[in-house]
Image 1 (spheres, helix red, strand yellow):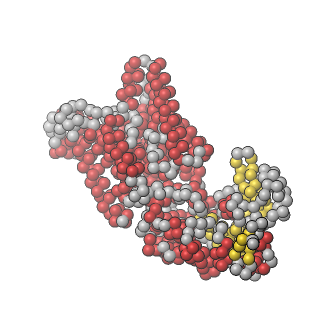
Image 2: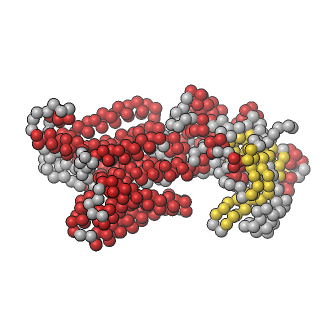
Image 3: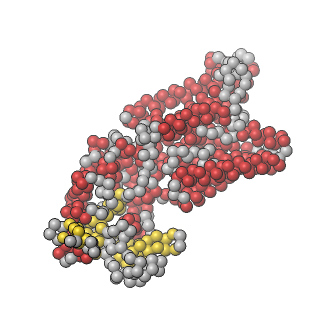
Length: 280
Length: 335
């Protein structure tokens, strides 16, 4: 595999700076995200999945280390340049209920339009293509507020598509979806990675679907307070204690990584059914 | 649905605007026929001098003031609602008008009958200080309801400082301030009109330039940042723009409540969309229409008496807000 990573991090520490100083969620991450692949980020609540995604797209500043996008440090990108490289789908609440789905997806063209945001024919074409790609074209004229959770998620994915970025990061895009929409969404994201050559990274709690669809898994372990140094001072210290585990689903099953990652006193990962099961 | 709405909404609003504009010139303590009004406006009038005086010196400035003030307040209300992600934000609710009031009170009571420019600057400083306070809290307080309550509290604080100032001021100055505080579109003479028009047209033009970032802000700050919006800069520009619009109207017309709060909702209901590309111009036009309507309603038919503007705007605005809140689930903006 001679693909060059589109996102690369070097001893990246993620976390927040806020009241009481720095709070490191995860230190010492060395990651590579490749184009043409669907990568799923798995981890327990609080492991720092959202923090990692926000750091990779520049919404949060790294506490330490660096993020490189296409070989160039993230901090050297202007907001405009970055908006043409990385598109995101987040979990935050919006007040977009009053605009049509078409208008919402058109906002994805923001980096490509002029001062007044007027859409030219190629922008309309990109919006229509994005609506088609996620299968929500029939709802184009509906208000965003009228959509079901699944449709709304698709609309926001279409927004990210219309942005025409080579990298798309999604924070739990399947969280509120039923089984069918979950799989559909994941499959359409995988198609996007394979056919359009985009690098798609998404966080999820849905191990089943991730194992079925992902080209690569990132397993982000939670940092236990006693496991590493205290959260406030651990920035550069032992990043080696709990690195992110990275690999194709099959190899992670074969080498027992998934069992070590998810298994505990009550649960174990069954490599045959590829599911978490209760220990007898 | 929204696509068809654009077709009729602009002509309808322009027609309403022109109708209300001339109604404002015709209607008053003295009824002047439309034909005479038109002749006076176009300079071919040879009738009573008193009528000419009434139309040119009193009614024309009043209707133009209402037109400008209405659109200014409505547009600043819309920008604040989008910025604070809150359907109940508005210049008078967030305490911004109260800040401007306080600025004007200080200018009037401490610096005597200040010039218009001083009044505008004082109103702007007052509005800006309140905006900065709200903005400061908006970083600490994540809940918009809490922020709204803080705005209301800041407004009360400004009002109580005004009361203390009034307590120490001389009777005539207090009277001057109280009269100003009633809100009035008729206080702007033809000579002062260019000041009002200059600032408010500048603010409105600036607001049209903010349509693109305003739409991005509908998605929240993270999405907007990801789309390449410099959110901090956009927020400052929006606040300066609303500050200028609110301050200039407050300086000339006194505090005018409810137009800034209610008109954006009227515009959304008319348009069926929260896309600022159309919502902002429609809010602008609807603001002018509603303010003209309120201005006309202050003249009691059959008598020469004028009601205070502050008695009329809530009658028009409050039912709209109640309707919007009651039907919140069926109306799609602010999901």
